[in-house]
Structures are given as C-alpha cells and as structure tokens.
Amino acid sequence: MQESGISPKEAPATGVQLLAQVELLGDNRSPGVPLCPLRFKKIVGRVSLLLFVCLLTGCGGEAASPSMAPGEPQVTVNAAAPPATSTPLPPPTATPSPTPTPVQPPVPTPEIDLTNRTVFTANLKADFAGDIDAVPNAPHYFIRATLLPGDVPTVQGVQRVRYTNQEDVPLDAVYFRLYPNLPAYNGTSAVGGVIVDNQWATTGLEYDDSALRVELASPLLPGAVADITLWFTATMPTSVVAGTAGSGLYGFQGNVYDLAGFYPTIPVYDDEGWNLEITATFGDSTFTDTAFYQAELTLPSTQEVVSTGTVVERKPNNDATDTWRIVAGPVRAFYAAASDTYTFLSEEVEGTTVRSWYQPGGQTGAETALFYVKGSLPVFNRLFGAYPYSELDMVAMPTTGFGMEYPGVINLAQSFYGEGGGAFAVATPHEVAHQWWYNLVGNDQPDEPWLDESLANYSVYLYYEDVAWQEMVDGTMNNIFLYRYNAAQNLGIDRPVAGPVIGYDASNYINIVYSKGPLFLHALRQRMGDGPFFAALLDYAQTHRYGVAYPDDLLAAFRRHTDADIDDLYRFWITGE
Image 1: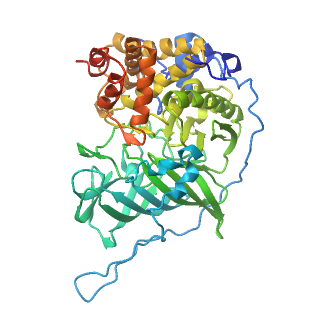
Image 2: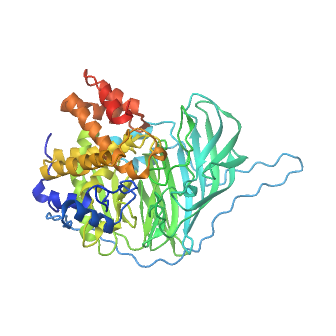
Image 3: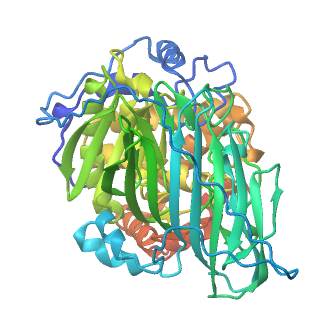
C-alpha cells in the first residue's frame, strides 16, 4: 500500500493512547460481564468509555491536538436566537362544488421545475457535474420548512416530490416513512392533506403510524411519474431516552437542533415490496434510494445551519429569521442541524471543502477531527473512487453515541471535544468511510447492517495500513476486531454476522457487526491477495455507485476478481452455515 502525506509523527497522539480512548464502543465492563448493548454510533458516553479503558489498558490517555498547524481557522461566532414568529402554511381547503366532484386544487407549492437538475452541479466537484444524469429517475424533493423553537420544538412544512416508478410492476400506492414516530426517534410526525397529480388523495397510517400510505387514483405504471405534495409537522424530543438509537441524534439538546429524518421520506421498494418494518431501538432505521433535494429552511437569524449539500442562498426575512436555500444530490438522504453557538474550521482536501464545526471550548477537538478527515479522505478516494461532492462537514453533536453518518455530514460526539479528548481516531475515519458504504453505495441497513458497518470499520484498518501507522494497524486489529470477537465467543454470545438488527440481542450487536464482520473481509483479503481484493472493492463501489447493493452483489464483485473459492469463508463468518 502507498503512504499518504500524513505520517505517524504528525498525529495528534500515539496509537496506544488513541486506541485506549476508543476501544471500539467503550464498554465499561470487564470481559466476564455481558457487553455494552448499543451500536458503534449510538452508545456510550465518555464516562463509560474511560472506565472501560482503565479495565482494558490500565491507562486513561487523552487525545492531544495535532502537532501540525491547521492553518488560519475561519471562525463565525453567533449570538443567542430569539424564537421564530413565522406562521406555518396550513393545508388548502378544497372549494365546494355544486356537483359531487370537488374542484381540483392547484399544486400548492411555489412554481419549480422538478425536471431541471442543473442546480445540483453546485453540490458536485467539477469532474462529477455529469453525475446529475447518473440516476435519471431518482426522486426529486422540494422541501419548505420552518423551525419553531419552544418547549416542544417543531418543524412545519410543505413538501413536493416528483416520484418515478423505477420498478417493473405497477404501484397502487406510494409510501412515506415518518421517522420521528419510530421508537428510536422519540418524536412525532403528522401529515395533513396530500395531493397527487392535482387531486386530493386518500391516505392511511400503518406500522404504528411510522408509515403513511398514499393511495393513487390509478396504478402508477413502470416509468410513469407522480407529483405528490403534502403538509407535515414534526416535533422534537428535548432529552435523550436511554436505550434508543436516538441517543441525541434527533431532537433539541445541548443548544443543538438535530433534524435527522424530519421530513416524510419515500422508502426503497424492492423484491420484498415496500421496506416499512418498525426498526430496532439500536442500529440504523433508514433504507432509501438516491434522490435530489432542494430545501428552503427558515430558522431564527442567529442559527448556523450544517446540512447535506450546498447552501446557494441565505436570505434574511423581516421577522428575525433567515431562509437557507440548499441543493443536494444525488444523495441518499437530506440532513440538517442548527445551533446559535457553532463555529468552524475549514480546509480544502482534494477539491472538497471540509468544515469542522464545534461549540465553545471545542477548537482542539475540531482540529483533531479535521486531522483525521484530511488523512482518511484521500486514502478512500484512491481505494474506493473519488468522493464526488464539493463539501464535507463534520459537526460536534450532543449525542451519547460516538457518531453518525449522513450524506455529506459526519456527526461526532460533543463529549470528544473537551479537555479529556475522545475517540476521534476510529469514529472519524469510520464515518468518512460511510460516505461510500451507505451514501454512494446504499444497502438495507435495518435488515443487512453488516454490509455497510463491517465495510466502514474495516476501512479504518485500511486507512492506518495505508499511512503506515503501525501502532494503529495493530491496535485496530487486536483491540477492536479480535478482542471483541473473542469476547463474544468466551461469553457464549457469538452468532452469524448476517441478519437484521431487530433479530440481534443488543448485547452482541457491536461485537458481531463491527468486529466479526471486518474479520471476514480480512480473511477474504488473505485468501484472494491484495491486488484482487482491492480491485474487487473498487469494482463494488463503482458498479453500485448511487444504487442499492445486497450481499450477493458484494460477493459477485469479489468473485469477478479471483478464481479462489471464497464461499466457505462467507458461510463460516457471515451465514454460519
């Protein structure tokens, strides 16, 4: 493997110190006690992390700031935000008609051409401007929403979607996931009137109100288009509920609004039909197609917004609010967060503007996070194909987990950013790798979590191997992969890697998906050899770019690059057969 421009001498701390802080997911129990139940991204506060470190390594090292100077930071300091006073748009009322047939309303959103994708070139690096045509039938969302602060923060909006039937069967309905209604999110989401092709539609709630069924007047044939407009209201929790995947990843706390999944989202339709299951309170809940997004978000003027995509305009209004116009695509989802205390550092990395956002007192942590993005992004560009977007943001969030990935945005735990440091060394490159293994190459995260999580965690190992940081190479393999896999065996909680999140016992989810899964990839690499293995990874990433992949697709990519029998490895590590 070639070395990148970042060497161990430039690192913010020794590999031993950083892995001591990380020891993936910071269990605060000894190997003889059942392990921490939640997933890599959504568990463990710093206190439990440090307790576990003491048990495992007998030390409590701190993450130091990088010895390299990050350059002059670009700093923005914001004042406190007054409450928004804007009034949300209500659904229109159908005008009575002298006949039983109601007068059909116009589409109640601003005139906007949802067939024009040229606006999205702003979100892409120049070499990838042509990607706006890579998925010609991808959904195109227009979202206009207003954040209303208060005891129960609320987002109210109207959304219009151009949806093309990309399946080979007619559809008699289109579904929208209402993520805040899932147990993991601990919020609420409600939809008012829905209009399809200029006619009021019949709707119904299913799956404990987490799925909205929108009936179509006539079946939507393959290749046909439906124009859907709906009004929605989402409320946000203001505290973390223990044992949920939310863990601060949706809601308002620590002076941060986290808007993950705030808008009604069309799920994937595949050979199993619409993917609508009620997901576990740990692990990921989303499974979506690549889409295009235009958003107009109105917030108090003192809020700074961090989002998927590119801000093309920030316009002040006359009521102490600003409206942010954002374009994003092609991407797997749209995400936004906001705070009146965010400041950022910024650097250019291989044509991508990387911003590291932090709250007061967090500059050292922001520099450390930026260090790991600057190191891992070029490595992954070379191994998996270039990151196509013009921006990548990482942001400190008040989550009790380690981090969370979104298209173009990486969330990292606010607890890392204090004087004690944190697990940047694994969390940051892991989430950077998710820009490929989740965003660019989609997969069924609730049903096949290993496909993106195991790849993302093994990518951490590949990063340290590429930059020849041997302490971290050895530590990742021994302290993260082998330790947890061996612990699962010793505790009698080992199981096959394959399977849905909901089918896991929470006590072994991390050990299996994040540790045993990467060991399968390592065994595969040893069987195939480095050349064929890395050629297969690149093949997989490029073949399924902007699409959805399944385990058979990953195996097919490896089989295209080797004559070696690899089926026994898949059975041993993944299916357990």
